[in-house]
Image (cartoon, rainbow, N blue to C red; front, side):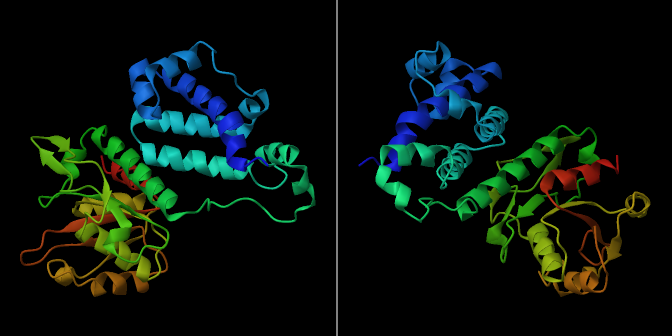
Length: 302
């Protein structure tokens, strides 16, 4: 009797780690940095680099393996992908390769001939698991934040109350399902300042607007708030975006009914804005499919 996990450890893992270590080294990371990211010793990384660890040609040649190595390697090197997400992506890959009739499943059946007569499937992990979904959202917000930091002139678009870039999970219901920047994105002497790494449940206002828009029928998964001006709204409309004004009355109290009413009265909304009121700064909210897409919208204003 041989467990599927044994096939994974003995045949898949050495090859996957070797490919990922090589990918990270090619991206300029040191042997120490690679060891830290992979959770292995530096001597193990050295063995991977010198070909001292036996690898499986069939596994190495699989396009899904190569794609995962490239995506995870790029994300780990840039910081857009956390170690948790890297682990989840590897787990999902393992379950894909373990599906009945697939590469690892065939190896498992070869080691256990009795499985040939079994009608079930040994996949036990969900590719659409909550942890994977949330890590992907965080990764997307990280990419968006990096784009903001490298967007010349974005600081001029930051409202006095600060900006935030948020993205939610597909089944988001509360602000705890929305990832954003803790403490908001600030203009510090003309420079875009991001105080901390993105996390869930850290945005109140922008997350609430996004959730209100979604509850009224919007398909947007992300939002970014910028300073209001007539020129900004006109520029966005000229670029083909649908802009809708809403009553700012609920901005200070957290009442999102005005946002929901504005979205519900329109067939499609890309831009929500309010022109201010007593104690309320005028703001433009950019709605998009992802955090990077929201940043691309903002760049059209520069």
